[in-house]
Amino acid sequence: MSKLSKRGVGKYKTDKNLKSAYTSYLKKFDFESHGSKYSTSNPKDLSLSWEDYKKVTTKCLEEIMHQVLHDSKTFNVPYNLGEIRIQKKQMDIRLLSECKNLKTDWGHFQKTGKLIKHLNEDRDNCRYKFYWLCKKGPSGKSYYKFDALRERKRELAKLIKTTNIDYFL
Image (cartoon, rainbow, N blue to C red; front, top):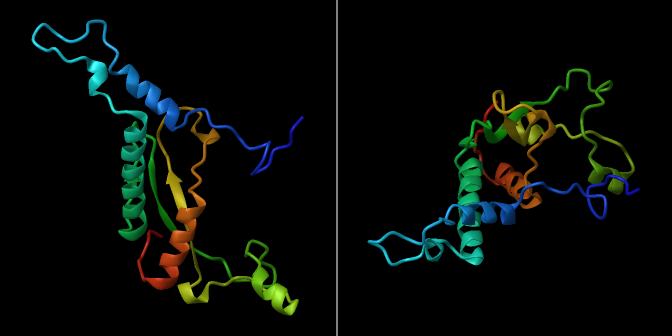
C-alpha cells in the first residue's frame, strides 16, 4: 500500500487534465456527415492539433493568472464553480506568546538557533494566498481544492516584496 505524499509514488492522480480536455474538444468536431452539400471541408480539418491546442490553452491560463496577480482581479470560473483571487488576511498577533498559528522563520533559526515567528511587519501583518471562493456550485465541491503552481506562488511573493499592489481583504 502506497502512502499519501505530495511527491513521488503516492501523489494524488487527477481525474481530468489537459489531454482529457483535448479529447472532449475533438468530440465536438465529430459529426455524422462530413460537411454539407455546400461545403467540401471536413469538420476534423477545422480542429486544432494537440500542440496548437496546448499553446492556446496555456497562453489563456497565463493571461488569466497575470490579471489575477498583477491587476488584482478575480477570475470567475465557468459553470458556476466560483472565483479565484488573491486573499489578503490579517494575522492574529494579539497573544504572541500563545499563538501557535504563526509560521516559524526557519532561515533565522538556521543562522542563530532561536525560534521566532514570521510577523510580516513589512506587509502590515498580513498574509497573502491564492483563494478559491465557491459558495454555490455542484454538490461535492468540498472534495476539491485549488492549489496554484509553485511558480505562481513564487511570483506572488516577488510581487508582494517589490510592488505595492493591494489585494482583497
